[in-house]
Length: 242
Ligand code: NDP
Image (cartoon, rainbow, N blue to C red; front, side, top):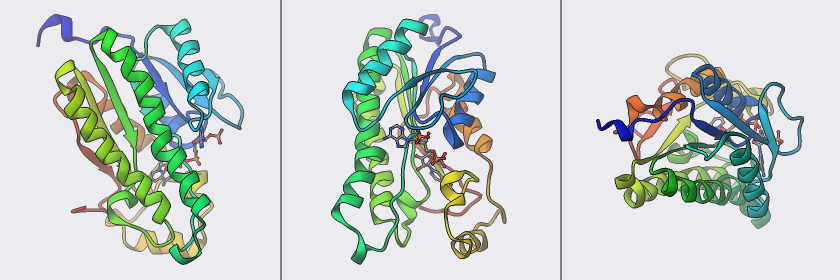
């Protein structure tokens, strides 16, 4: 590889929804690897020890302001992890159009807003890494999650289209698809739903956020520079073949 293609360390990494759960673990993993890490948070507290900016992924102006703050602190963003996400679970026949739109606006359109803003900087930097946090449910499906699954499947088309547009400009875009990870999002699920999932996971356990974070950090690393448009499961085998 030519020297000019090497990423100078530390890189500027932005993780949306980095104040808790999987996003927080991802931020920690990049920081442990020596990168300058900024996180966004929305409603909660700014996480201690990280450069944090308040931002709502449903609002393009708020995303732009967040990028400006991060660029002023660390310089242009080279790695962006679109992690912020919500659920509004209910069965199809009961799902309100608003439940569908809210989930898509956060999980899919939100990722678009975050990644499009990053791509402008990538063109100037002449490199960039996009990691979209999807879900096993995006390709496997899940009762009660028509909105969520559709939003997460959409991220696959997004990463692959970014790859086709910008793959020749030293930009990679990949999807990481977690299975059942121990966070506040999954703790909110009813006990019988949790037990049903557990029974269908070949690994026989749920995972911790750090197990997802390690994969995200790796796919954004120089070692993985020839991987783009991939969907990488971190699900203990739950979604095999999907
Ligand atoms: P949490 O519910 O613990 O955290 C969600 C994060 O997203 C929070 O930081 C939250 O910010 C942020 N967020 C939500 N809406 C917005 C918004 N409009 N603008 C900005 N930030 C927002 O979720 P997890 O850590 O469990 O999940 C993280 C990602 O991983 C999500 O995309 C989720 O879909 C995905 N995932 C999770 C799985 C799991 O088993 N936990 C499995 C598969 C995928 P705030 O705290 O301020 O509300």
